[in-house]
Image (cartoon, rainbow, N blue to C red; front, side, top):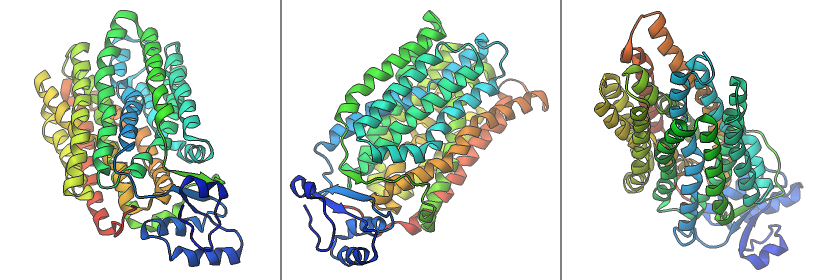
Length: 470
C-alpha cells in the first residue's frame, strides 16, 4: 500500500496492497491532497490530478508495476473469447443480410432496412457508453459481464422469433447492441491495466477474437440457415454466446476499481487534449469505412457479381480470417515501430485496398484476395484503440476517453451502412448502373474515409504523452 501523507485512505486497502487516490470535497482537504500529489510517481500523479475534479469519487490501484504478463495472459485469452462471442458474432450479420434479401425472409423489405438494423446494433453499443461506463464503476466486473451475457444471448434468441422488421430492430439491433456495449465498456480498459510494453500485442491478440468469431460463425450461421432456417440459426448463435461468455465472466479481473462512483456525462473537458480530438476523428472515419466493407462484401458478391450464397459467406469468412491474422500481427508491429505512426500507415492501406482492389473486383478469386487483405488491415480500430488512448490520456481517464470516442463514432456506425445501401440504390435507379458497378460509389466512400482517418491519426503524434503509466 502506498500511503501518501495527507491523503485519505480506506483502511481496508491497508491490508490489500492498493493505492487509493481520493477527491476530498472540502477546500482544506483538497489543498492537502494537491500537496501530496507532488510526492506521487509521475504515472499516478495524473490520475490523482484527475481525481481532484470528481468530488468524492476515488480510484484504487493495485500496488506494484503493471505486470506486462503473468495473469495478464489469462486476461488476454478471456478477452479473445469475449470478443469472439460479441463483436465476432456481430460480423456475421452481413451473411444474414444477404440471406434475408435473396430469400425475402421479411417480405419485400428493402435492403436498406436491414442496413439500418445493423447500424442500430453497433451504434447502440456506443450510444449507451455513458450508462455502461457508470455501471462498470458501480458494480463488480462479473456483474456487468453477466448482465451483458444474458441480454446479448436473449437478443439473438428473440431475434429468431421476429416476424416483423421492427421486432428484428429491437432484438438484433437494440438488445444485442446494449449487451455488446456493456461488455466492451467493462472489459476494454483491462489490457491497459495489465500490460505496458506489450500492450499493443496483447490488445491485438485479444481483439483477434473478432476475426475468429467472424470466421467460425460465417460458416456455422450459413449452414444453420440452409439446414434449419432463420429461427434455429439465431437460437444456436444465442446459446453459443451464453456458453462462451460464462468462463470469461468468472475469470476476468481488473487491477483498479472506483470507490463512490458517480454518474457523469461525457467529460467534454477532455477535448482540451488535442491528441484525443484527432484520435476521435480517426475513430469516426475509420469506423465509417469499416462498417461499409463489413456489411457490403457478401451482398456485393451475391447481388453484384451473381455468386452463390456459399461463396458470399466464404468471402465474409475470408474477411474475418484476415482480421484473425492481422490483429495480433498488427499488435507486434505497433509495439515495435510505434503505435501512432504504424496505425496511420495501416489505416491508409486499408483504404487503398478498397480503392484499388475491391472497386475493380469482378471475380470470386479477386474478392477473396480483397477480403483477406482488407481484413488484415481494417481491424486496426479494435487492435489499436486501447493502446492509442493510453498514448494520449492516463489510465484514470481511460474509461471517460473511451466513452467520448464511443459517442463520436455512434452516429456514423448508425448511418454508414444505410448510406452505402442508399448510394447503391441511387446508382441502380437513377444512374441505371448494373451488377458490380452499382457499388462503385459506396466502395470509393469506404476507401476515402480510411485515407482521411489516416491523415487525422498522424496529427496525434504531436500530442503523445511524454510519460506512460507504470
